[in-house]
Length: 122
Image (cartoon, rainbow, N blue to C red):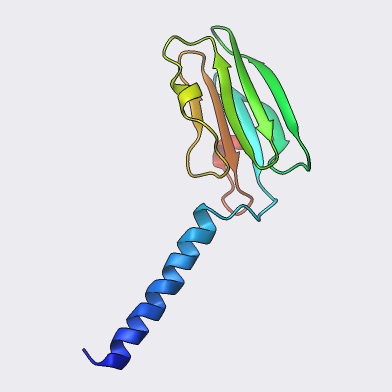
């Protein structure tokens, strides 16, 4: 491999990594939506970004209350009626890479990016 080939490979690698970073970690896209489902039915939707938001919601699940915390650009479950608390341990989410699921209470909290769309919402 010549020196020029190595430079081209490094430049392409840098461009690829920048694309991956912007897709998964950049929070500048204000077009996302927080979707809360109970037993497979969408019960609430909120815009992902709302300036100065610091709000708690009590969601009635199948087996009790799941308490959700919304802050500008992120969401987490802080309390749940489930026995294992995996949903609480999931922590904050701020993109569509992973949802928060409370399976015993049948509550799903996820973020839908405007560019992703979601067939489950129809």
